[in-house]
Image (cartoon, rainbow, N blue to C red; front, top):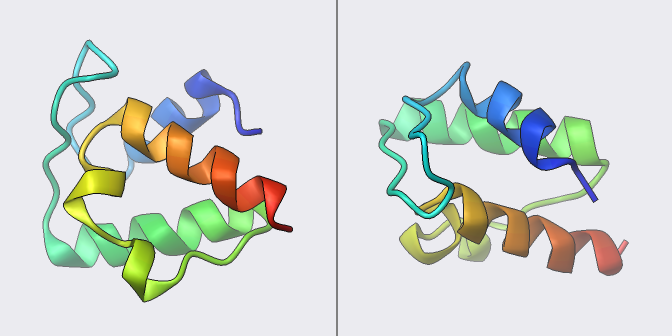
Length: 74
């Protein structure tokens, strides 16, 4: 599983990273696409379009939960 601090470091390239991991993430659509590609590369996984939702990408905690599930499906 990707460490929380590594995810935060990746996110800093694409979004304003909040202090709290349950706080909302804000990014535009281009940044979201670039983030998905960066996470796929960093984690060795595929993120399907159906998983790119506000529910999964709305906070660091939500994103970590999604990545944990996807990593178990590798």
